[in-house]
Image (cartoon, rainbow, N blue to C red; front, side, top):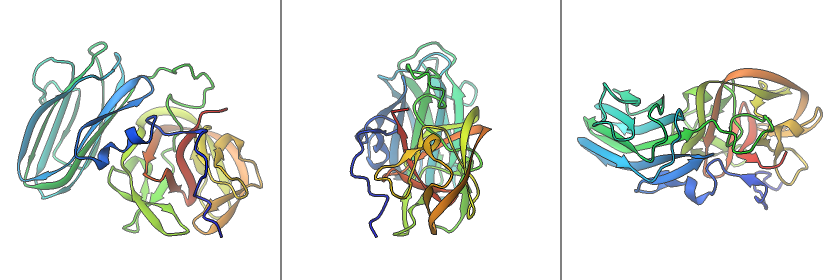
Amino acid sequence: MKNPLVSSTLCLLLPAFGSRAAATCLHDDSLETHRLGSCDGFSVGPLSGGTLFQQLSQGGLNIPDQASYSCTLTCDSGGGTTNFYLVFGSSGSPSSTNANVKSEGSCNAVVTGTNPNGNVTYVRYTLSITGGYSNFMISCTCDSGSSDGDDDNDGPPGGGCFSVSDTVQTKAGKTVAMSDLVVGENVLVDPFKQLYEPVYSFGHYHKSWEAEFVELHTAGFAPLQLTANHLVHILGESEPVRADQVRKGDLLWSMTGAETVTAVKATKKTGLYMPLTPSGNIVANGIVASTYVSIQS
């Protein structure tokens, strides 16, 4: 049987940060910039060592006023303490008292904040780690909240998302909720080959945003909830299709083979999550989905 997850054409698919090359920043030992909508984020790592203290700035960014920022920290900890403080603009050295985004204590965390300082072109951050660490990475994404001309109400700007009710399977054998997933976690992406890949970043990670989701029901698994423009794999289709184009009776690819769609419903949920994997696939609620979105309605 041909592996249905191998796509021959990606011309109608859009990675969450634009080009694939720009989205693989966490595989490099350098700091790179990636763009989400009209708002820039950055990534740094992996880093390893004993004790680290850095005060750094990242320039050349585009961060509008009131843009939301989400930073994911992940590492293999040596049992020490990690403090991360980020401020927008140049208003002093980042610390626990003035940070717009901060994380204290753990090197595995997701923290969020808002830019209150008008349009800025750089961020400053302080990072301190004690107790030893390895494979430390930071990935910060930014969302301006602007529609970028997209008025089809498919969800937040820049891409499709999973809901808080969706889960993934990790290589460690655990079922993990989207809201608890962290960068670096190895998740199931191909049930036919039992292939796992690391989550290298998030296109969206918003716990407080409410959105409309398409709810795909099957007999064998919990309903999969996706924004309308998110893509899933259907038996008989050479390319993945939008969630809002799935119909009752369609066959989805699942962990156990073909799974019949028994109902398609609409629902509203609070929380939007878009984990990104190198292959562009992820198994959510037992169903094989893409991490890509459609640029066509």
